[in-house]
Length: 289
Image (cartoon, helix red, strand yellow):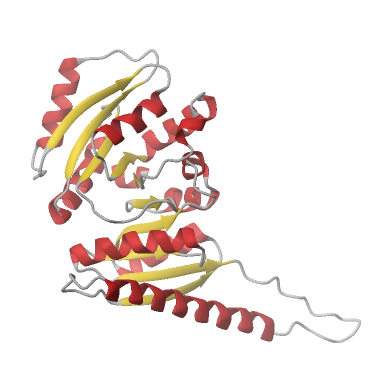
């Protein structure tokens, strides 16, 4: 596996995401890249009246402050890694600082640093709806072609044994599943396919079998199961299905993610989803091609 990119805004949310990245790095012997992106300070134009121009010092000072914060964040994560005496591998942790659009910066880093997985914390409190609608999350997912793991702050990385993959049996999910199969082989987790059946959608056993055959073709999944979730409160039922299966992580394509965004806006089950603790692994649309 290539390197793992961790996005941070120095909050507890982002440190929780970094802990998950640390777990994955220890399992795969990957290098961790900690990255912070900030918007630059507007440049003060040259004043023809006073004859004075902008000074670079404020921007340089901000740059140094962020570098220091990155260093402290990395040191804290190194201490976390040292606490686990059972590990026989300590990942290398490096830091990167960028200015400008988050999505564009992440896309460039993926190519520069051989990144195969992006990990980030939820950008708002911790509710499931914020995981679906966070602005920074959208900036990243729209620009990258690698899987993005979104971690709510309540999530504590203790294990990764079972992943639920939410599908509606669209051919675009085949590519994403191949990527998931690669992760399954590396980390040794099983995969539970959960079919989200929305209102008006017909259930077709033949189509299900055909796609399951495609998903299994050439993939070495530790264990592959199937369940269907249908009805009105689909989001709440998906959550219950994950809990019943002992799921540690929920995976879906960008298309399915967008579907859940629309469903959340209309859902009457928001209260039941506020304490969602499962991280979300999103396969962007570019990764599905």
